[in-house]
Image (cartoon, rainbow, N blue to C red; front, side, top):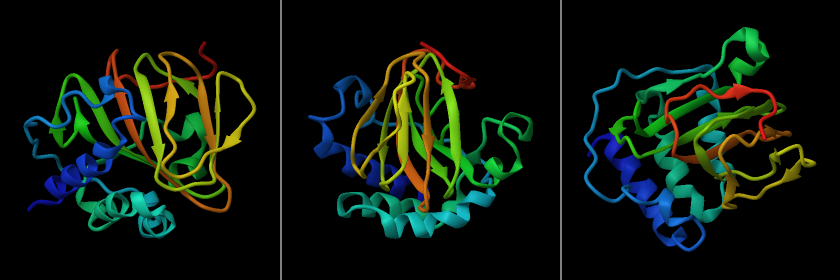
Length: 198
């Protein structure tokens, strides 16, 4: 079984028992056949954090985090921003990998699913996008803020919903963040807009 197929199976196994917590519109289409793309692997500096993240996950999250960490450099990782946006230190500690979507290892025009990785002591400032979003942190302790509300720590496995064009931000402490994301609606390849949204 390929790395990507194993990761897709792990993602499906993780989300299946969460059907009551994650709105059905984010799960539609994830179980059916998905055409696989042959993407060129792209590594990033932040991948050094994957093993640590896998060790910090809650028990339900461990199989998925370990499936990602084992050979994570064989996947096509990306960055939305450049040094001019948030600085070089941010880029050293930031990356995402789309498993399913318009750019992902598995093609879908209806949904995007992937992973966000942030290093310790990293602030991902306010940003927003047209796509509606679910985050499920696989590691805990990161401070999350939405719509200008005071930041609050979220635990591993918690479902965080960001409506379309509502600003949100994250700030890690001593530990890195590994989070699963699901996008639906709007342009699934849209670059996030920096700054306050609704």
